[in-house]
Image (cartoon, rainbow, N blue to C red):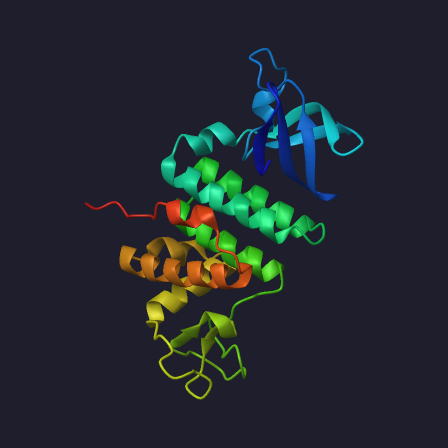
Length: 237
């Protein structure tokens, strides 16, 4: 489930991402009543098997069975909650054009990971964003030059050009990024969690800035939820 909003006195319109049919908007009748049979199964971040009745303008949800009860576990932790909101907003934006089972599986896996606290919420979000954008056709390069393909490593990152760029391709004033940050970005993209978890806070923050800029650039309209994301801080001691 991506998002919901109220309809009338007791109903909700639910926007969901399906495995086979892309994004679906449907009415869940009576779910705001305390006696609703499946209201909690249709909250954001939940994964459910849903049956629909085809309506005139919107389909009507007739049954919902929980497959992944991630909502309450995610909402119980602020960092996970803000990260999940950014994830579902991104998925909502990236799946407008056509169905993508890869985007569906990526989102479900990321929400499951958040609910289990497998990795830091900020790292999980940044990895999800890089992978989701890659599936959408905007794969960044953090090794070879994204413009001419010159072998890396390179130290300049230009989000408008798709990642790292060599000295010949870098525009004047292009921001420099240290090697540790570039390595973390590559780890997040490839799913090297051992390397990602070992990164210090300062490197995580720098990588997060690059990921946020890259995401905002390619989605054109900014993600509202990104401004509320709580970033990871490694425990000391």
